[in-house]
Structures are given as C-alpha cells and as structure tokens.
Amino acid sequence: MAKKIVIASGKGGVGKSTVTVGLGMALTQLGKKVLLIDCDTLRSLDILTGAAEKIVYDWGDVMLGRCKAQEAIYSAMGMSLMTCPKTYKGVSLKNMALLIKLVENDYDYILLDSPAGIEIGFILASFVADRGLVVSTPDSVCVRSVCTTADEMSKYNVKDIRLIINRADKKNIKKNLMLNIDSVIDMTQVQLIGLVPEDEKIRHSSMKGTIYKKGQISYDAFNNIAARIEGKNIPLEV
Ligand SMILES: Nc1ncnc2c1ncn2[C@@H]1O[C@H](COP(=O)(O)OP(=O)(O)OP(=O)(O)O)[C@@H](O)[C@H]1O
Ligand SMILES: [Mg+2]
Image (tube, rainbow, N blue to C red; front, side, top):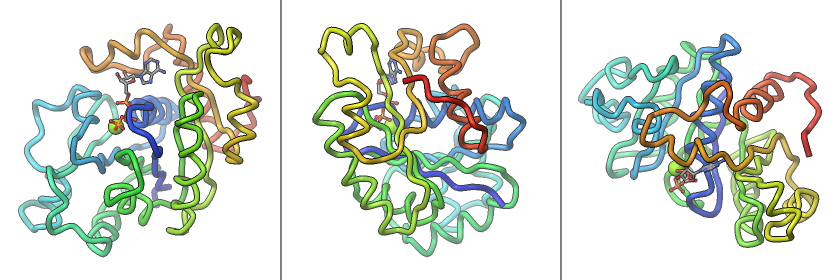
C-alpha cells in the first residue's frame, strides 16, 4: 500500500508543486512507483510534468462517476498523475478517501500537492495523508505560517511532519538578506528533512517541463530528501 504524503505550506508560491515533482522524480529514480495527485484547483502538476496536453479526465470525474480511476491517471515523466477538478463541487472527504482506496495498492508513494493555505484542498490532501511535508522559503512571513500548517495537518492525524526549506540561497543568507537555516528551524519547531537551493534552472522549468535533472544544483537536494523519506541516514547539508 502506498505511503501518502501531503505537501503543503501556509503561503503561496513557495515551491510546493516544484518539490512535489522533484521529489516524485527522485523517488522514481530509486525504483519507486509514484502517483502525483494535484489537489489545487489552479493545477500546476500537469504543466510541470509536461503532461498538460493529454489530460482529459481529472479525479473529480472519477468521483462523479464519469470515468474509471485508471482513465484519469496519466503517465508523466516516469510517474503517474491525476489532476485536480476546476472546482471542488461534489467533492467530499469520504469521496477522497474512496478515491485513494482505488489507487493506493498500485503505488509505493502518493504525493498530494496541496494549494496554499489551510482550506479545502489542503484538508482533502491532509485527510488522506499519513505523512506531511511543509515547504517554506527562508523568510519570516513564510516561516510564521509553517507552525500553523503543521498544527492543522496534525488535526487530520498526519504523522512524521517534516520541513523542507526551499530556495535557500547561501549568498543571501550570508548577507543577512534571508533568515539563516538555524533560525528557520528554531522558529518553526518542525524537524528539517532537507534544503533545496535556489536554482535558476528550476525558475525556467515550467517552460520546459523539467525540474529534476542531473547536473542541476537542486538535483542532489531532491535525491537526499527522497533517500531520507526512504529511511536512509543522509546527513543534513545545513
Ligand atoms: N528552488 C527553486 N529555485 C528557483 N525557483 C524556484 C525554486 N522552487 C520554486 N521556484 C519557482 O517558484 C515559483 C513558484 O513555485 P511553485 O509553483 O512550485 O510554488 P507553489 O508553492 O506550488 O505555488 P502555489 O502556492 O501557487 O501552488 C515557480 O516559478 C518556480 O519555478
Ligand atoms: Mg502549487
């Protein structure tokens, strides 16, 4: 049965969808079968994985009986992908749990990309997840929202909640233009599982449908996070 991981943040635009794809690809490289489920009605994952053109059905269609679960699953860069309906009409926690039951035996990991905030998409993803990743950039506004997000996740019985600090830029941290990593960990009280550096190549990735590529500076970061999720003891690169 798949391990189900919600990827969330209080603030928007911090890199949840980027991390979902990068981590999914790193887990795939470890030989794992990965299903990405986009829980954000604004949808990113189909674009980020280059699968947008072929999408016909989303998981809302499965819930409404318009198609079978398998018909709403698309292959995307070696992973599988289910996209989000454009509205949450007809969606309930019970239906979400039923949807997961239909697919969880076919995968090692299901990564649930939450929208920003702690509203419906976040609740749906957290309700079915057994583990959680909270993504933050190293700035005070974003860091403040991490605790709230982690607390909300716990209410849905999500265990093993870990922090990913994204867009960590050593030069800016040195110049005190960004919070240093120790401060972020102290402020959030959520255990760190990895840092993803600022990576210029990621910034342009939505145009090319690639986030995770050998030679990019974020490549090892995604591999390390995937290995830690798999239980390997990889020292943190703080
Ligand atoms: N490590 C990184 N280095 C450089 N750019 C990044 C990095 N991570 C994310 N970005 C860029 O930041 C922007 C937002 O990323 P992304 O869409 O993954 O955030 P999000 O948290 O999913 O946003 P939303 O809250 O809207 O769902 C994108 O342009 C992405 O390319
Ligand atoms: Mg997103």
